[in-house]
Amino acid sequence: MTDLLKTYLDDIESRIDERTEDEILKYLAAWSRHEAGSQDRPRGRKASPSRLDWPKININDAIADDEAMLLSEFASVNQRLSLDSCYPLRVRCNFGVGNVASAFGAELFVMPRESNTLPNVKKLGEDKCLELIDKPLPGLYAGNFEHVYRVGRLFRQIADSYPKIGRFVHVEQPDLQGPMDNLELLWGSDIFLALFDMPDEIHSLLDKITAYIKAQMDNWLAIFPENRGRSNFFRYVEGGSFVVRDDSAMNLSPKFYSEFIAPYDGRLLNEYGGIVHFCGKGDHFIERLTALPGLKGINMSQPHLNDMEKVFSATIDKGIHLSLSVKSFEVRNHDTSNLIFLHG
Image (tube, rainbow, N blue to C red; front, side):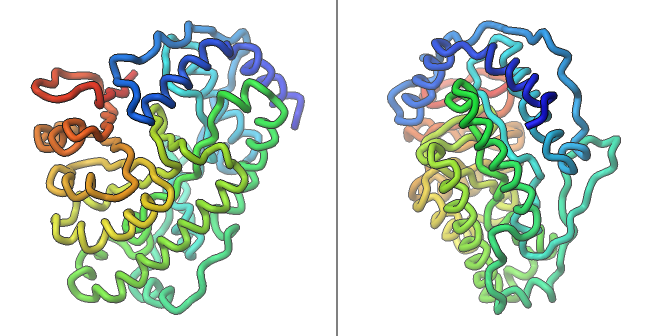
């Protein structure tokens, strides 16, 4: 650990108020057990600005250098401590959406520096994806995971060295997306035609990707066993241990959702419990989503693209937590104790 990094970590450690963070964690734990409603949220932390000039790290620098990644992530903790809020303190190995796809051979695509945007991957295409069916699962440290685990172990070292950071700054799981999202990254957008043309092959690939995600999650939980029972999605905390990203689902009919997404997401949620996140329109499959075993809550954005009456009826009215990554708006005739707006 360099002296520069230690200076900033010392700053974070000195500004964490244990009593306040205890109150926040107690509320989050009660929320995840459905023993508290959104109206019970604690007052939260008072702004505690840093005396240091925290660096602004470009994402391209963060993915290329471990110390830059750590500084970038702890800069987000600095921002939380600098504002009045009750959102959890969290960091993650922030290498973008392509971790699983990169392990299966997809090439990393780094965005132009001026965009300051996380990298993605280049698709393998249909032929190379079909070749994956008969290949063994990639190793745990394939692709991006070499970097993910190197940074993850540094987070582990920091958590073990700084008592308050270790207790109150949650290290989120790396981005594992969801089975169908990963297959779309690997295959390309014409994957949706292949659902009609070669469903057996698609199921074989989804089964393999799901098995690999499970292997990665088990490995991650061995390093961070405290993550069992707590799933984080930025400002949102829920029960379970896993976060599924399901952005591809908006392109599928309810029937195809049940055939190609629900069984594989369901395996992961049944194993670990957790959250499903999706962007875009999801009201057409929301009832099938909320029937998945192990589902603890849903995070979604872009409510304006959805019939929110359907969403509310399938979620908060049935006691399923819903978080919306937007500013609050009026909700009538629904149980808003199970609803949290995430904004600011």
